[in-house]
Length: 398
Image 1 (cartoon, rainbow, N blue to C red):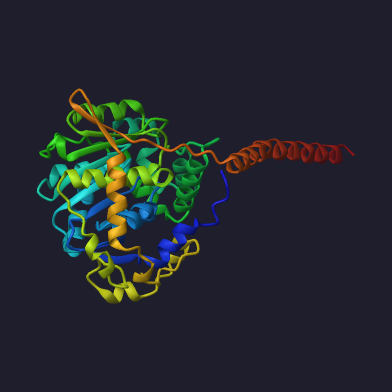
Image 2 (image 1 turned 120 degrees about the horizontal axis):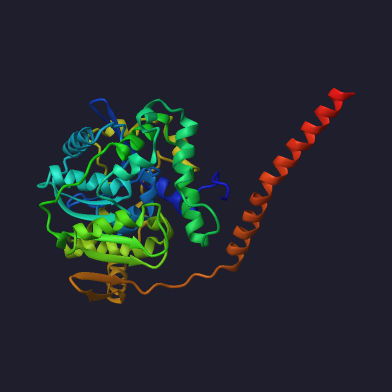
Protein backbone atom coordinates (compact mmCIF):
# COMPACT_ATOMS: atom_id res chain seq x y z
CA UNK A 1 0.00 0.00 0.00
CA UNK A 2 1.08 3.51 -0.68
CA UNK A 3 1.81 6.09 1.96
CA UNK A 4 -1.27 7.56 3.57
CA UNK A 5 0.15 10.78 4.96
CA UNK A 6 -1.09 12.94 2.09
CA UNK A 7 -4.81 13.60 1.90
CA UNK A 8 -6.61 13.83 -1.47
CA UNK A 9 -7.15 17.36 -2.70
CA UNK A 10 -10.93 17.00 -2.87
CA UNK A 11 -10.95 15.77 0.73
CA UNK A 12 -9.00 18.83 1.88
CA UNK A 13 -11.51 21.00 0.04
CA UNK A 14 -14.37 19.09 1.70
CA UNK A 15 -12.91 19.66 5.16
CA UNK A 16 -12.61 23.36 4.45
CA UNK A 17 -16.26 23.59 3.42
CA UNK A 18 -18.21 21.18 5.64
CA UNK A 19 -17.96 21.44 9.45
CA UNK A 20 -17.63 18.38 11.65
CA UNK A 21 -20.21 18.40 14.44
CA UNK A 22 -19.65 16.84 17.85
CA UNK A 23 -22.36 16.41 20.45
CA UNK A 24 -22.41 14.38 23.67
CA UNK A 25 -25.58 12.37 24.19
CA UNK A 26 -25.55 10.65 27.56
CA UNK A 27 -22.18 8.93 27.80
CA UNK A 28 -21.74 8.76 24.02
CA UNK A 29 -19.89 11.21 21.82
CA UNK A 30 -21.40 11.59 18.35
CA UNK A 31 -19.28 12.90 15.48
CA UNK A 32 -21.08 13.62 12.24
CA UNK A 33 -21.39 15.75 9.12
CA UNK A 34 -24.74 17.26 8.17
CA UNK A 35 -24.93 19.07 4.84
CA UNK A 36 -27.75 19.99 2.47
CA UNK A 37 -31.22 21.59 2.73
CA UNK A 38 -32.77 20.70 6.08
CA UNK A 39 -36.29 20.54 4.62
CA UNK A 40 -35.33 17.38 2.71
CA UNK A 41 -35.58 14.00 4.54
CA UNK A 42 -31.96 13.03 5.15
CA UNK A 43 -29.92 10.17 3.80
CA UNK A 44 -27.88 8.91 6.76
CA UNK A 45 -24.65 7.06 5.95
CA UNK A 46 -23.35 4.39 8.35
CA UNK A 47 -19.75 3.15 7.89
CA UNK A 48 -18.25 -0.27 8.48
CA UNK A 49 -15.64 -1.30 11.03
CA UNK A 50 -12.79 0.52 9.29
CA UNK A 51 -14.78 3.60 8.37
CA UNK A 52 -15.49 7.01 9.87
CA UNK A 53 -17.93 9.74 8.94
CA UNK A 54 -15.25 11.11 6.59
CA UNK A 55 -15.33 8.18 4.17
CA UNK A 56 -18.59 9.42 2.64
CA UNK A 57 -17.25 12.87 1.85
CA UNK A 58 -17.70 12.34 -1.90
CA UNK A 59 -21.40 11.54 -1.38
CA UNK A 60 -21.88 14.55 0.89
CA UNK A 61 -20.40 17.01 -1.57
CA UNK A 62 -22.10 15.60 -4.65
CA UNK A 63 -25.61 14.95 -3.36
CA UNK A 64 -25.84 18.11 -1.26
CA UNK A 65 -25.12 20.24 -4.33
CA UNK A 66 -28.01 18.48 -6.08
CA UNK A 67 -30.39 19.47 -3.29
CA UNK A 68 -30.29 16.43 -1.00
CA UNK A 69 -29.47 16.40 2.69
CA UNK A 70 -26.75 13.94 3.68
CA UNK A 71 -25.73 13.03 7.23
CA UNK A 72 -22.64 10.88 7.76
CA UNK A 73 -21.95 9.59 11.26
CA UNK A 74 -19.22 7.83 13.20
CA UNK A 75 -20.42 4.71 14.99
CA UNK A 76 -20.04 5.65 18.67
CA UNK A 77 -18.63 3.38 21.35
CA UNK A 78 -21.57 1.05 21.92
CA UNK A 79 -21.00 -2.51 23.05
CA UNK A 80 -24.16 -4.39 22.09
CA UNK A 81 -26.88 -4.11 19.48
CA UNK A 82 -29.62 -2.95 21.84
CA UNK A 83 -27.38 -0.13 23.02
CA UNK A 84 -26.80 0.84 19.39
CA UNK A 85 -30.54 1.06 18.67
CA UNK A 86 -31.24 3.18 21.73
CA UNK A 87 -28.22 5.44 21.22
CA UNK A 88 -28.98 6.03 17.53
CA UNK A 89 -32.60 6.87 18.31
CA UNK A 90 -31.50 9.43 20.89
CA UNK A 91 -29.13 10.94 18.35
CA UNK A 92 -31.97 11.35 15.84
CA UNK A 93 -34.14 12.96 18.51
CA UNK A 94 -31.42 15.45 19.46
CA UNK A 95 -30.81 16.59 15.86
CA UNK A 96 -34.58 16.73 15.34
CA UNK A 97 -34.79 14.12 12.57
CA UNK A 98 -37.74 11.74 12.57
CA UNK A 99 -37.97 9.92 9.22
CA UNK A 100 -34.74 8.73 7.64
CA UNK A 101 -33.26 6.86 4.70
CA UNK A 102 -30.28 4.70 5.65
CA UNK A 103 -27.24 3.87 3.53
CA UNK A 104 -25.06 1.29 5.27
CA UNK A 105 -21.93 -0.52 4.14
CA UNK A 106 -20.62 -3.72 5.76
CA UNK A 107 -21.25 -3.43 9.53
CA UNK A 108 -23.16 -0.20 8.87
CA UNK A 109 -25.57 -2.11 6.64
CA UNK A 110 -26.17 -4.68 9.37
CA UNK A 111 -26.81 -1.97 11.98
CA UNK A 112 -29.14 -0.17 9.57
CA UNK A 113 -31.25 -3.32 9.23
CA UNK A 114 -31.37 -3.81 12.99
CA UNK A 115 -32.60 -0.27 13.49
CA UNK A 116 -35.22 -0.72 10.76
CA UNK A 117 -36.37 -3.91 12.47
CA UNK A 118 -36.81 -2.35 15.91
CA UNK A 119 -37.85 1.17 14.84
CA UNK A 120 -39.84 0.55 11.63
CA UNK A 121 -41.73 3.84 11.75
CA UNK A 122 -38.57 5.91 11.47
CA UNK A 123 -36.85 4.11 8.58
CA UNK A 124 -38.41 4.86 5.20
CA UNK A 125 -35.89 3.06 2.98
CA UNK A 126 -32.59 1.15 2.99
CA UNK A 127 -29.55 1.05 0.73
CA UNK A 128 -27.29 -1.86 1.62
CA UNK A 129 -23.78 -2.38 0.26
CA UNK A 130 -21.62 -5.41 1.16
CA UNK A 131 -24.02 -6.02 4.05
CA UNK A 132 -25.06 -9.18 5.89
CA UNK A 133 -27.93 -10.59 7.98
CA UNK A 134 -26.20 -12.38 10.84
CA UNK A 135 -22.92 -12.32 12.75
CA UNK A 136 -22.41 -15.98 13.69
CA UNK A 137 -19.84 -16.59 10.95
CA UNK A 138 -17.75 -13.62 12.13
CA UNK A 139 -17.82 -14.84 15.72
CA UNK A 140 -16.71 -18.31 14.60
CA UNK A 141 -13.81 -16.82 12.64
CA UNK A 142 -12.54 -14.88 15.67
CA UNK A 143 -11.72 -17.33 18.50
CA UNK A 144 -10.44 -14.49 20.69
CA UNK A 145 -13.76 -12.63 20.42
CA UNK A 146 -14.50 -12.90 24.20
CA UNK A 147 -11.40 -10.82 25.00
CA UNK A 148 -11.63 -8.30 22.18
CA UNK A 149 -12.50 -5.58 24.71
CA UNK A 150 -9.16 -6.06 26.47
CA UNK A 151 -6.98 -6.40 23.38
CA UNK A 152 -4.30 -3.75 22.73
CA UNK A 153 -4.81 -1.16 20.01
CA UNK A 154 -2.07 -2.43 17.69
CA UNK A 155 -3.60 -5.92 17.64
CA UNK A 156 -7.07 -4.58 16.85
CA UNK A 157 -5.76 -2.36 14.05
CA UNK A 158 -3.76 -5.22 12.60
CA UNK A 159 -6.83 -7.46 12.62
CA UNK A 160 -8.97 -4.81 10.91
CA UNK A 161 -6.31 -4.01 8.30
CA UNK A 162 -5.76 -7.67 7.42
CA UNK A 163 -9.43 -7.76 6.40
CA UNK A 164 -8.71 -5.18 3.69
CA UNK A 165 -7.50 -6.85 0.54
CA UNK A 166 -3.96 -5.84 -0.31
CA UNK A 167 -2.06 -6.26 -3.53
CA UNK A 168 -2.25 -4.75 -6.99
CA UNK A 169 -5.39 -2.70 -7.54
CA UNK A 170 -6.76 -0.35 -10.11
CA UNK A 171 -5.44 3.13 -9.27
CA UNK A 172 -8.78 4.42 -8.01
CA UNK A 173 -9.33 1.33 -5.84
CA UNK A 174 -5.80 1.65 -4.45
CA UNK A 175 -6.51 5.26 -3.53
CA UNK A 176 -9.71 4.23 -1.74
CA UNK A 177 -7.83 1.61 0.28
CA UNK A 178 -5.16 4.14 1.25
CA UNK A 179 -7.78 6.62 2.41
CA UNK A 180 -9.60 4.05 4.56
CA UNK A 181 -6.31 2.90 6.10
CA UNK A 182 -5.57 6.50 7.03
CA UNK A 183 -8.95 6.69 8.75
CA UNK A 184 -8.30 3.47 10.70
CA UNK A 185 -5.19 5.12 12.13
CA UNK A 186 -7.39 7.84 13.67
CA UNK A 187 -9.57 5.36 15.57
CA UNK A 188 -8.92 4.73 19.26
CA UNK A 189 -8.64 1.32 20.87
CA UNK A 190 -12.17 1.59 22.30
CA UNK A 191 -13.55 2.60 18.89
CA UNK A 192 -12.12 -0.51 17.27
CA UNK A 193 -12.99 -2.80 20.17
CA UNK A 194 -16.62 -1.70 20.28
CA UNK A 195 -17.07 -2.13 16.52
CA UNK A 196 -15.49 -5.58 16.53
CA UNK A 197 -17.74 -6.48 19.46
CA UNK A 198 -20.80 -5.46 17.44
CA UNK A 199 -19.54 -7.66 14.60
CA UNK A 200 -19.05 -10.81 16.70
CA UNK A 201 -21.96 -10.32 19.10
CA UNK A 202 -24.36 -13.02 17.91
CA UNK A 203 -27.46 -11.54 16.32
CA UNK A 204 -29.69 -12.06 13.29
CA UNK A 205 -31.87 -9.56 11.44
CA UNK A 206 -35.49 -10.67 11.52
CA UNK A 207 -37.90 -10.00 8.61
CA UNK A 208 -38.59 -6.30 8.24
CA UNK A 209 -41.92 -4.53 7.95
CA UNK A 210 -40.33 -2.39 5.23
CA UNK A 211 -41.38 -3.42 1.73
CA UNK A 212 -38.66 -4.81 -0.55
CA UNK A 213 -39.49 -2.08 -3.07
CA UNK A 214 -37.98 0.44 -0.63
CA UNK A 215 -34.67 -1.46 -0.43
CA UNK A 216 -31.72 -1.25 -2.81
CA UNK A 217 -28.84 -3.73 -2.66
CA UNK A 218 -25.65 -2.31 -4.16
CA UNK A 219 -22.81 -4.72 -4.90
CA UNK A 220 -19.54 -4.78 -6.81
CA UNK A 221 -18.78 -7.60 -9.21
CA UNK A 222 -15.06 -7.89 -8.48
CA UNK A 223 -14.46 -8.74 -4.82
CA UNK A 224 -15.49 -7.94 -1.27
CA UNK A 225 -14.35 -8.74 2.26
CA UNK A 226 -17.87 -10.02 2.99
CA UNK A 227 -18.19 -13.73 2.08
CA UNK A 228 -20.37 -14.38 -0.95
CA UNK A 229 -22.54 -16.74 1.09
CA UNK A 230 -23.60 -13.89 3.39
CA UNK A 231 -24.31 -11.62 0.42
CA UNK A 232 -26.46 -14.36 -1.13
CA UNK A 233 -28.43 -14.64 2.12
CA UNK A 234 -29.14 -10.93 1.93
CA UNK A 235 -30.40 -11.23 -1.64
CA UNK A 236 -32.65 -14.15 -0.71
CA UNK A 237 -34.13 -12.20 2.22
CA UNK A 238 -35.13 -9.28 -0.03
CA UNK A 239 -36.10 -10.86 -3.38
CA UNK A 240 -38.04 -7.77 -4.50
CA UNK A 241 -35.26 -5.31 -3.73
CA UNK A 242 -33.71 -3.27 -6.51
CA UNK A 243 -30.24 -4.39 -7.46
CA UNK A 244 -27.45 -1.97 -8.34
CA UNK A 245 -24.37 -3.57 -9.85
CA UNK A 246 -20.96 -1.96 -10.16
CA UNK A 247 -18.47 -3.64 -12.48
CA UNK A 248 -15.57 -2.86 -10.13
CA UNK A 249 -15.06 -0.93 -6.93
CA UNK A 250 -13.61 -3.29 -4.33
CA UNK A 251 -14.61 -2.95 -0.70
CA UNK A 252 -15.09 0.83 -0.84
CA UNK A 253 -16.97 1.71 -4.05
CA UNK A 254 -18.24 4.95 -2.48
CA UNK A 255 -14.62 6.15 -2.70
CA UNK A 256 -13.34 4.31 -5.78
CA UNK A 257 -16.47 4.69 -7.93
CA UNK A 258 -18.20 7.74 -6.43
CA UNK A 259 -19.97 8.86 -9.63
CA UNK A 260 -21.69 5.50 -10.08
CA UNK A 261 -22.53 5.16 -6.38
CA UNK A 262 -23.92 8.70 -6.20
CA UNK A 263 -26.08 8.03 -9.25
CA UNK A 264 -27.51 4.87 -7.70
CA UNK A 265 -28.17 6.71 -4.43
CA UNK A 266 -29.97 9.44 -6.32
CA UNK A 267 -32.04 6.92 -8.28
CA UNK A 268 -33.02 5.22 -5.04
CA UNK A 269 -34.03 8.46 -3.33
CA UNK A 270 -36.15 9.51 -6.29
CA UNK A 271 -37.86 6.13 -6.49
CA UNK A 272 -38.81 6.19 -2.80
CA UNK A 273 -40.27 9.68 -3.10
CA UNK A 274 -37.52 11.96 -1.82
CA UNK A 275 -37.58 15.21 -3.76
CA UNK A 276 -34.38 17.19 -4.00
CA UNK A 277 -34.43 20.94 -3.49
CA UNK A 278 -31.73 22.33 -5.78
CA UNK A 279 -33.37 25.74 -5.44
CA UNK A 280 -32.18 25.83 -1.83
CA UNK A 281 -28.55 24.95 -2.53
CA UNK A 282 -27.54 28.60 -2.86
CA UNK A 283 -29.25 29.46 0.42
CA UNK A 284 -27.19 27.07 2.56
CA UNK A 285 -25.74 29.05 5.51
CA UNK A 286 -22.03 29.58 5.60
CA UNK A 287 -21.65 27.24 8.55
CA UNK A 288 -23.25 24.40 6.62
CA UNK A 289 -26.78 23.28 7.34
CA UNK A 290 -25.67 22.08 10.70
CA UNK A 291 -27.30 19.30 12.60
CA UNK A 292 -26.05 20.10 16.03
CA UNK A 293 -28.55 21.67 18.41
CA UNK A 294 -25.78 23.73 19.96
CA UNK A 295 -23.87 26.28 17.89
CA UNK A 296 -21.31 26.74 20.63
CA UNK A 297 -20.20 23.14 20.51
CA UNK A 298 -19.47 23.47 16.78
CA UNK A 299 -17.39 26.63 17.26
CA UNK A 300 -15.11 25.12 19.89
CA UNK A 301 -11.85 23.81 18.63
CA UNK A 302 -11.38 20.14 19.46
CA UNK A 303 -7.90 18.63 19.45
CA UNK A 304 -9.39 15.36 18.16
CA UNK A 305 -10.04 17.01 14.80
CA UNK A 306 -6.35 17.17 13.94
CA UNK A 307 -5.71 13.48 13.13
CA UNK A 308 -8.87 13.32 11.00
CA UNK A 309 -8.08 16.43 9.00
CA UNK A 310 -5.03 15.26 7.04
CA UNK A 311 -4.57 18.83 5.97
CA UNK A 312 -8.16 20.06 6.16
CA UNK A 313 -9.52 22.84 8.33
CA UNK A 314 -12.55 21.86 10.46
CA UNK A 315 -13.09 25.44 11.54
CA UNK A 316 -13.59 26.72 8.00
CA UNK A 317 -17.11 27.32 6.75
CA UNK A 318 -18.78 26.82 3.39
CA UNK A 319 -18.67 29.57 0.80
CA UNK A 320 -21.70 30.00 -1.38
CA UNK A 321 -19.64 31.36 -4.26
CA UNK A 322 -17.88 27.98 -4.71
CA UNK A 323 -21.10 26.07 -5.33
CA UNK A 324 -22.21 25.73 -8.97
CA UNK A 325 -25.60 27.18 -9.97
CA UNK A 326 -28.39 24.84 -8.94
CA UNK A 327 -29.95 24.88 -12.41
CA UNK A 328 -26.74 23.53 -13.97
CA UNK A 329 -26.48 20.79 -11.35
CA UNK A 330 -30.08 19.75 -11.89
CA UNK A 331 -29.67 19.62 -15.68
CA UNK A 332 -26.52 17.52 -15.41
CA UNK A 333 -28.24 15.27 -12.92
CA UNK A 334 -31.15 14.60 -15.28
CA UNK A 335 -28.73 13.85 -18.10
CA UNK A 336 -26.87 11.29 -15.99
CA UNK A 337 -30.10 9.67 -14.89
CA UNK A 338 -31.20 9.27 -18.49
CA UNK A 339 -27.98 7.36 -19.24
CA UNK A 340 -28.74 4.67 -16.65
CA UNK A 341 -30.48 1.65 -18.15
CA UNK A 342 -32.98 -0.23 -16.02
CA UNK A 343 -33.80 -3.76 -17.02
CA UNK A 344 -35.84 -6.57 -15.53
CA UNK A 345 -34.24 -9.68 -14.03
CA UNK A 346 -37.07 -12.00 -13.04
CA UNK A 347 -38.61 -10.37 -9.98
CA UNK A 348 -35.56 -8.17 -9.46
CA UNK A 349 -34.76 -4.81 -11.02
CA UNK A 350 -31.17 -4.67 -12.15
CA UNK A 351 -29.65 -1.27 -12.69
CA UNK A 352 -26.83 -1.57 -15.18
CA UNK A 353 -24.68 1.49 -15.38
CA UNK A 354 -22.68 2.17 -18.51
CA UNK A 355 -19.27 2.76 -17.01
CA UNK A 356 -16.24 4.45 -18.46
CA UNK A 357 -12.99 2.58 -18.51
CA UNK A 358 -10.12 4.29 -16.80
CA UNK A 359 -6.61 3.62 -18.15
CA UNK A 360 -4.00 5.76 -16.45
CA UNK A 361 -0.68 4.24 -17.44
CA UNK A 362 1.46 6.34 -15.13
CA UNK A 363 -0.58 5.46 -12.06
CA UNK A 364 -0.44 1.75 -12.88
CA UNK A 365 3.32 1.83 -13.35
CA UNK A 366 3.70 3.70 -10.06
CA UNK A 367 1.62 1.10 -8.21
CA UNK A 368 3.63 -1.74 -9.80
CA UNK A 369 6.94 -0.16 -8.75
CA UNK A 370 5.73 0.35 -5.19
CA UNK A 371 4.48 -3.25 -5.02
CA UNK A 372 7.89 -4.49 -6.23
CA UNK A 373 9.75 -2.41 -3.63
CA UNK A 374 7.53 -3.57 -0.77
CA UNK A 375 7.83 -7.21 -1.88
CA UNK A 376 11.63 -6.94 -1.57
CA UNK A 377 11.49 -5.29 1.86
CA UNK A 378 10.87 -8.51 3.89
CA UNK A 379 13.77 -10.24 2.07
CA UNK A 380 16.09 -7.34 2.90
CA UNK A 381 15.06 -7.33 6.56
CA UNK A 382 15.48 -11.09 6.85
CA UNK A 383 18.92 -11.05 5.21
CA UNK A 384 20.04 -8.22 7.47
CA UNK A 385 18.93 -10.17 10.52
CA UNK A 386 20.71 -13.36 9.39
CA UNK A 387 23.91 -11.44 8.68
CA UNK A 388 23.94 -9.68 12.04
CA UNK A 389 23.14 -12.94 13.82
CA UNK A 390 26.06 -14.74 12.13
CA UNK A 391 28.43 -11.89 12.99
CA UNK A 392 27.38 -12.08 16.63
CA UNK A 393 27.98 -15.86 16.72
CA UNK A 394 31.38 -15.42 15.11
CA UNK A 395 32.39 -12.87 17.73
CA UNK A 396 31.27 -15.24 20.47
CA UNK A 397 33.52 -17.98 19.07
CA UNK A 398 36.47 -15.58 18.88
